[in-house]
Structures are given as C-alpha cells and as structure tokens.
Amino acid sequence: MDDEQADRIEQRPIALHVITRYQRGGSERRVRDIVRATPDLRHHLLVGADSDVELAAEQTGAEKVSVLPALVRRVSPVDDVRALIGLWRQLRRDAYSVVVTHQSKAGVLARAAAAAGGPPAVHSLSMASFGPGYGRVENAVFRRLERLLGPRTAAYAVVGADLADRFAAVGVPRDRLHVVRSGVPLPGELSSRAAARERLDARHGTAPGRPLICYVGSLEPRKNPVLLARLLRDLHDRTATPPDLLVIGDGPQRGELLAELARLGLSDHAVLTGYLSEPRLVHEALRAVDVVLLLSDAEGLPQVLVQAAAAGTPYVAFDVEGVRELLALGARGTPVPHGRVDLAVDAVEHWLGGSPEPDVVADVSSWSPDAIEASYRSVLTGVLTASRRSAPR
Image (cartoon, rainbow, N blue to C red; front, side, top):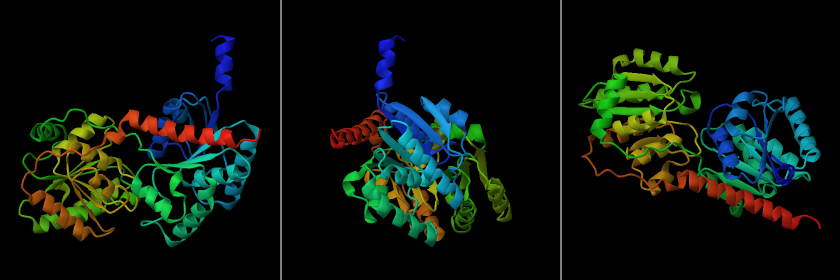
C-alpha cells in the first residue's frame, strides 16, 4: 500500500459499533452485514465484557475490536454508570462520524452518551426490549427509555415492519424507522418434498411415512422448547395419525425437554439432532416436514419462519413480531395468542389434516444479500449526509 492509498483510507469516516455481548446470533449477524454493506467507512467495534473477542474480530473484519469491561448484560448500576462514562469519553476522544448500537443495554448507554454532543446514532434492532413476553418492570423502563431516546436517535434499522410499529407506538418518530432485514441463509432450488423427506429419514432416523412437525432454534427459556412436549402429547391424544417431532438446535433446556418427553411417554416419537452447522441441512429439513413450530415469548422477525416460508412449509407460531408480516408476503401459517398451546394444537391439526395444497413459496426477496446491503447503505448514507449538512461551518 502506497502513501496515497493509506491517506485515502485514513480519511474515510469511522463508524463505531457498540454491542453488549458478541457471541453468535442475530445482532452479531447485523454487525457483519453493516460492515459488508459499507466498505467506504472504517469500522471500529466495541464489545461488552461477556464477548468472544476473537470471534468478533474474525467474523466482522472490523479495523479495530476492543472491550469495554463495564458493559455487561445484567443490570448493574455501578457497572452501567462506568460504561456510560467510558462511552462518553470514547465518543469525544476519537473522531467517529456515526455510532451504531446493537442490543438493548448497549443501545441505551451508547445512544445516551452520543446524545450529549456526540456523533449521530443509529440503533440496529433484531427484537424489541419490551412488549409481550417481558415483565412489567422491563416494559415500563424500556418504553420510557425509547420515548426519551427516540427523538435523539438519527435512525433505527429494524428487522421488520411489525417491530417498527411497536417502536412507533411508544413515540419513536416514524420517519426514523427503516426496515432492514437480517441476513438469513435461504434455500436455493427446492427439491420435491418426497425426496427431501427420504433424505431426512435416512440422515436422522425419523420414521418414514409418519407426519412430522419441526422446531428449529435454540433450546432456551425465551423460545419455550419444553412446551413442544405438551403440544405433541395433546396431538397424540386426539389425532388418528399423530405426528413425530423433529428438534433442530441445542441449548440449556435440552435436558429438560428430553425429560418431559420421557415423562409423557413420547421419547420414541421425537428426534433431537442438535445444532446443524450446514444451512443446507436445515433447509432440507424444513422442506421435508409438514409443519414448523415456534412458541417464543418474543421475537423480532424469526429467522426460522423466513426459511420455512422460503421452503413453502406452513408454520404455527405464537403471535410475536414477524409472524403476520410473513403471512402478508405469501407465507402459509397460523398465528395463535401467546401462551395458548391448545390453540396451537388446533392449528397444527388443521395443517396436518388439510388436503395437499399447491407449492406456495413466499416473497422473501427483501432478504437477499443485495437488498440488505442496499438498505444499510441507504440508512448510513442518509445519516452521514444529514450530519454533514448540520455541522457548523
């Protein structure tokens, strides 16, 4: 690299990304998507104490990755004040053109620090921090914080229109809410369902010819995986040809789910594959099964339902953000009120008992890498242009 090239790189605007915890998930994917979409910016990444720093550096390609030790996920008044002060100092010490925040804690603290005379802030949202599935205190606190921070946030990049509506309802200016999808691995050319099922049965030992319902995701409390056992038991008690259950994913509640399946006498009717690292295998499973299930307390726009919609497979889900949005794009599925497992059972029975329908695949073009990159460039360019125009001359 010659001196002229180095000077050009040095003169590019710098974006500071702040994330509470960098591990593996939707927010982390959005960091990577933004970096990829805006190569005309230099990107620095500031992560919280519970982060995998090597993973962050490897995956994002950020020019600089550093840790703010006081930035922790749990509520800690002392650490939170220290993190706020640390962010305030960093935003004034270095010449950042924009700060991009990810996840709830970093979103609040970094935007508050930026509001006090710092660079414009963009808040990237994978899911809400308030609404159904959250406690009374969390709802009250985070609604109030967004009312205060909304007018001080230059732009929001949210995964879906349902999520944007939730923030607009608490007073975030509508013109600052921009829908930018999270990158989701999508299936390519679809094989026949029969062929996909044959390969699935051979690979994972699912019983050929039996109806099959499927859950894909982390086995963690927010996703309520243990409820899958109760739902399966109800289906076995009332359905002439009851289905088996396929669970793709891993997490802290794996043992609890296995124990509940055993207690209900269903161990022989469930297959848990663990985490599948190859998207192709997940896509093939979603193509092969009869119904996809999602019983989460809260979501932003569930990745697995986007993939199910792209595979043309119906879903049954608690009525969280994104479920109805995908239906409007042509997906087949049934939203049920949060917590109503009985209605979820009814809906699964409906999809299992219905006559075969034409292969309908939803319009998921807004999840293409090109569309996502264009959306991020539009948001960041708009914020930087407005900031330059308002800068004192």
